[in-house]
Length: 115
Image 1 (cartoon, rainbow, N blue to C red):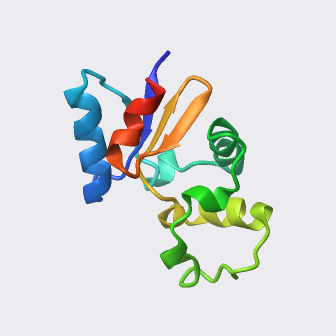
Image 2: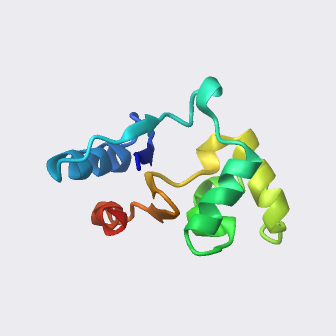
């Protein structure tokens, strides 16, 4: 199986996450989700949540950007998924995906827990 890193090269935490993986000998497939051509769909975001153990999308949403994006605090999970697909800035990063498991790389060492 291929390890996929949901990555933003402009983010310090995301860069450090990639460094942690590379130091462990893992060369992940990079998904630059901020690029229009590589954005995550609602279905892909739902699959990530499922692979994280069936969590709410809020588990990997950047709360501090939600209000600026017009997402109300009481938004449903469906609304959160839709907002994240439309505005990828709302997605916390990095996220590691390996097979049927996914993890938010906060702290970055968490990315190694799904190897």
